[in-house]
Image (tube, rainbow, N blue to C red; front, top):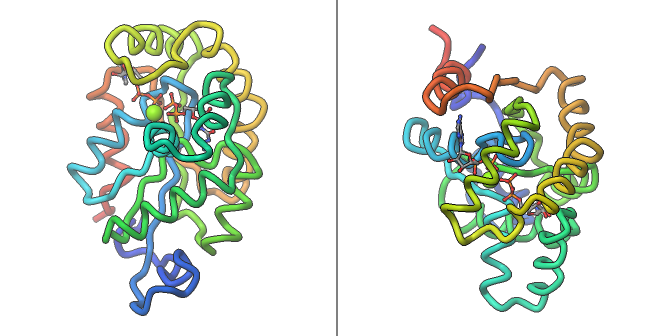
Length: 212
Ligand SMILES: Nc1ncnc2c1ncn2[C@@H]1O[C@H](COP(=O)(O)OP(=O)(O)O)[C@@H](O)[C@H]1O
Ligand SMILES: Nc1ccn([C@@H]2O[C@H](COP(=O)(O)OP(=O)(O)O)[C@@H](O)[C@H]2O)c(=O)n1
Ligand SMILES: [Mg+2]
């Protein structure tokens, strides 16, 4: 497998609709997996080791609620119901965060979660992901992790059993088809995410480390 860092990718000018004058190349890796599969945890380690900027769609949406945005109430209700926020909102937040980061390598975590997300991002930014990192984990394990995350973090008001079940259903119905779409293009790098954090990262590392 070739180096992620050196692979050709989209033009940053497209990311900001031609508003940027430089011609830096952008590398995007989508990070997908069910709720509680460990996306956020592993992204933090990838950032430390491989120089990517981590953009979590869920974190950006939660920050938008906290900022008192006019969309805040709508976003909050959708998250409570485990539903997917309209792409118009999420893509704008991602695009702004990419511009503000000053980086050219992005891990986009928890996105695209449905076909509408995928289509909107592609149309607005012109970016195709380098690959899709997919964390494969059983529902039983994800449920266990989310219920214990709920006890340590006050930030997630969707880690209760009712919302968790709804999120699993949305994952299977809306997000798995996105993974299948990229799988058909040979872009999916699937990781067994049911192991310990360290074991999962060992597998992740092999994907981000250029082959000799
Ligand atoms: N491999 C793992 N084994 C056990 N617990 C994990 C593992 N990876 C993450 N966790 C824990 O599970 C919860 C969900 O992880 P998180 O990274 O937030 O997942 P996601 O972003 O996919 O929802 C967190 O409390 C995290 O500390
Ligand atoms: N692309 C996205 C990502 C998250 N979300 C919303 O944000 C919630 C939490 O997403 P998250 O990515 O933080 O959740 P985890 O999969 O990390 O547990 C989702 O259940 C959706 O309601 C969304 O609407 N669109
Ligand atoms: Mg997360």
